[in-house]
Image (tube, rainbow, N blue to C red; front, side):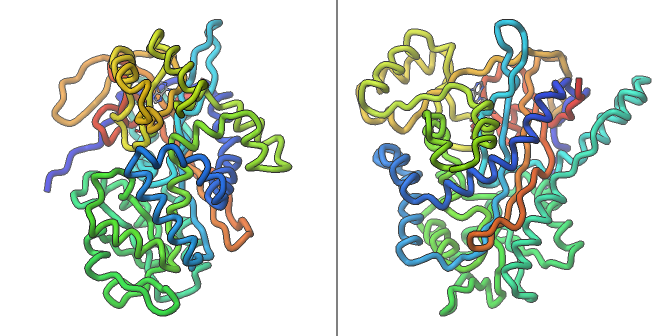
Length: 432
Ligand code: ADP
Ligand code: MG
């Protein structure tokens, strides 16, 4: 086993306080939206119809979703933990605007490790003689909020002896982040077990009431920190996933909520009238959500897709080309975007992607500290994430909260990639 420190910036990064507040203010709206999409079979079916014809991974998830619905949902308590990510787009007049990059509805990470960065950066500022600035760093601990959501779902499931199961990777790279959430649960006297898909395949079973058991132990909540990329699955793992989804256990997220987080869904949401249909009677929430949208474009076959594909080929630096993948490092930019799009422009393969306007933040200088890497000053941009937590029992929302934030910073020469991908590092917002 090898332990490295998590990568971080030497200094906190400036974040406009108005945009920071805006991001917090819209989080409960996004929680409601994700939850509404997850319950809207017709919307998911229509939205993903073209994607699942060409994208095998999304198609497999979708098939499980349909199978579980046909059988009838055994689960009655729903827990969502998401993270909505933003960049600060620099307008022509230099005013920054909050623009959503994406919303992560499965395995949204770093809520644990980020709770430590304010202390680290406070200390650095004090060493530099900046005590006043240090005292202005906001405390932040998303792992408590995430654990409170899991604890609420566990309580509503209603079995004192049942455990919470963290579904984790074959090879652990981010265990300490997960432990922060886990510790909060043990502190509340909730037992936590850590298992892999492979363990579920070998030890998992359902009883007549579809209660989930692992080696004889009842599971109340399954918290996925795995299962969001194709490489997480072999045939046995798919079977394990199906078993979990069929069960009564609270899945965080259930498969419908995972699908609600696809890039294709994000793109469809930006169509005029779509938010209004998904959140009827919530005009203010709709306006807050829409204000964070960048331009998003469908590449479905037809005139609309032909047109935007041609525009992007002519001016690739205006756009990002995104497949239905998570975890960083999958998007295409610039010349590469042009080449790929040129190759697939007349083929249905293009419908496995969406196009998005490229956000252009104002860079700032910082040092990125990473184990075994040389220390150098870099021109950087930051991405702010807000954690959202909600719990629904039947039709009733019993918890809906923003649970804290995450700031990640990367050097501008990397177009893509998060902390886990080895590109971005942990940071702390310094509100200006
Ligand atoms: P993933 O699911 O892989 O995290 P994202 O949509 O978050 O996919 O994109 C990964 C990274 O690519 C982001 O963290 C960001 O750095 C960059 N990125 C994504 N969309 C845009 C965009 N519209 N403009 C600029 N950079 C983007
Ligand atoms: Mg991302």
